[in-house]
Length: 470
Image (tube, rainbow, N blue to C red; front, side, top):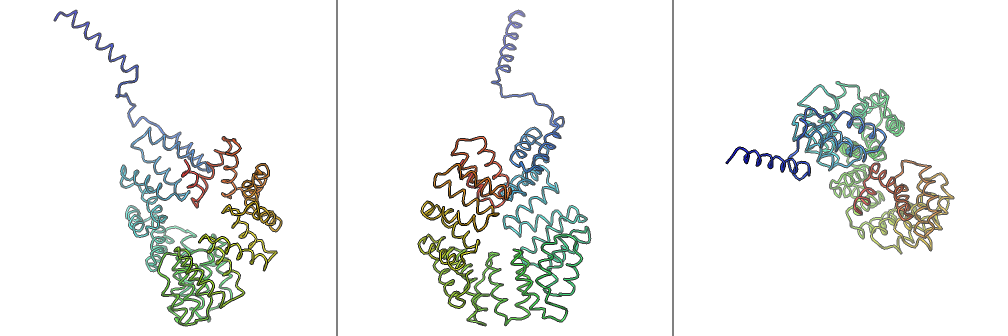
């Protein structure tokens, strides 16, 4: 082959390669070295967006950063932190695991993974992960705090107290003070109250508990103190603490039927077996209405609606004037799908307490949230609720949603915006407003509201409705 032919073929081949590259059909790309990629601006922007609670936008920015710097785990860790704020536990777990697959000993990712696992109810797995965090750095209080909360969820109160004690010795954490005080009070009232009095934060919980315990002194029955503390923790929805206190109360005074009844209620709420505690309470006092009342709640949560109604009726037989039991009966019948019976129960409550905004709200929600007889009755009840509770965001939300369902869209928007003016953090009226704006074809405004719901809905109820529809 002559030199001229050879050079001609090389020139032709070079031209083909250049043409392929320019056309974009080649799978090879010239990439910048990974160490040259600077994602600082992305992280800063995401931080600002997260601070403004624009979580979806922050996550989008972090995903871009993760694409640009595939070996940098910081975007993944920051995404996980946002998911934790949103209580989107499974997503948090996934991104923290991705981060740890790249950087095994990343302590922030380990802490985040443990938090996500605890949020999912996997307390044993969370305990093991928090132990890893502690092993990496025993001098940091956050690992010990997480370990204490995991032990608390597992009803290992001695180990929890030891972990919180270590955490408090490392850093003056008011949360650690709270846990130590509340674990101490059922056992040693004087020491626990002194610890509560030293707290400078979490004042709402502290003050509520101190008020509940105000009648007691150093000479009071420790079993009674533990019982009242347990009931207070139920009111605060501090269920593991309630379980500890009521376990102490029943151990110290096994003949107290109320303590057994409240213990059973707490166990049921925590997903633990509860019937043994209820049976113990009933054996001590067959006439105690609390027992069938809590049994009804326990059975309803597990889907046994007929049995739950039976228990509530028994509770009303023992305590005929207890409107709370009547309300539980109405709610159970509604969940069962027996709307005619539920309606009668709700209406009877309102007739008994015509000035009660609480019972009026339950009646209104029964109609409006189930789209049941809204035009015939629900709208009128919603209007009455606003009269009874003129500063309630919930009342205006139900009114707006009733108007939406009856076709009065302009008035519906007025009511829903009034609800958000009264409570900008409320999720239900924001979701309903987004639905309304979508129907009105105001798509940009609707998407903004849908995004806020996705970002802010800690319960996940409305978020799932939006994401499930897409």
